[in-house]
Image (cartoon, rainbow, N blue to C red; front, side, top):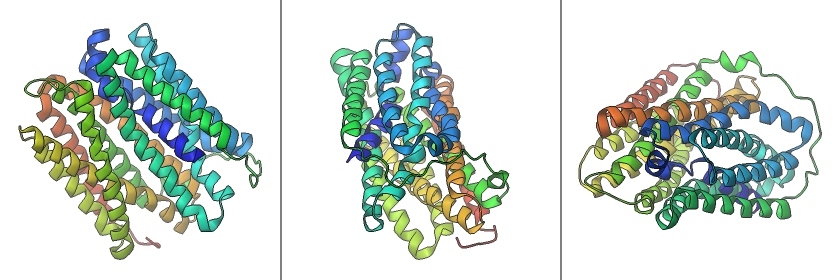
Amino acid sequence: MALFAAGLATFALLYSTQPLLPELSDAFHVSPGQSAFSVSIATLGLGLALLVAGSASEVIGRTNLMRWSVTATSVFALLVAFAPTWHALLALRGLQGIAMAGLPAVAMAYLREEVHPESHARASGLYIAGTAVGGMSGRLVAGGLADLGGWRFGAGGIAALGLLCAAVVWLLLPASRNFRPGSARPFSGRILRDPALLALYGIGATAVGGFVAIYNGAVFRLSGEPYLLSAGASGLVFCVYLLGSAGSATAGMMADRFGRRPVVPIGCLITLAGVAITLSAPLPLVVVGLAVMTAGFFAVHGVASGWVPARAHAAGIGTGQASSMYLFSFYLGSSVFGGLAGTAWSHAGWSGVALEAGALFAIALVLSLVLKSVPRLDG
């Protein structure tokens, strides 16, 4: 339950400014591209910090790192709601991203060490459920509260949710009993020499880049003509995240039955189909397109993220380091390509955003096909 609360808080706070992008653009008199940077700088900070957080936990311990990570992330979120200037807001969002790295970097390692093997899958599933619920609820709550009292009220409400979850973590998270302190180990260059791992890092970066670009652009599209939806109403579109969970679960079952290599390209094709559907004008079709794209993305990410440690283990490479590099690539792609969506929107509207996302998903498709020619180890 503590890890569920921690996952909910972390991922609710990470993308909390996404439904507020039009309001931030108006409040601080910045362009759509600049407002999208409020999302990108947090994911960039998270990605960079992930490179050291896992190693740091070997020295300072899992429990302390997770407790303080959720607490600091929530405190920075509260300060964001009172940011006096645009640059102050960006600085706080960057610090927020760095602070939240302590949870995803070590949560799975903590569960593996502390939970009985018979309960590990259920405990891990509960943590992942918390991250999924957090990613959806953060956008829903922030957008809904912004309708009631402006973007600061929306940001403050999410911060309050984070502080509540941090209190749950401090009260319920059991202290580590099986953790043994060690020394921080530097990254091995082998994680950058295996062709399959390199392709998987690229798939993670491009797939999430297209995914975040679509949603960054969608909040501007839905708030403008002809839809004119409020922040709360447009935030409801994030309910399609539920289909993402279904897509990930279904892809996992297909990968168990048919292997990972044919499943990832299928997921990429589904994302491309979803992007194409969003080019339609009727709002119901736009939502259908977002739902299809979301299901495809989570299918790709769910299989690729599990493939990385399996491939690393088969190649005799540290699974933790390989997974950290995948997450670094993942959040770097989210930061860079997601931030470009605002610029694409300013220059070419939705067609520009769809073109960017479509190109990124196409690259992921090519990389997934390249994977089929890489010699097999065990997967």
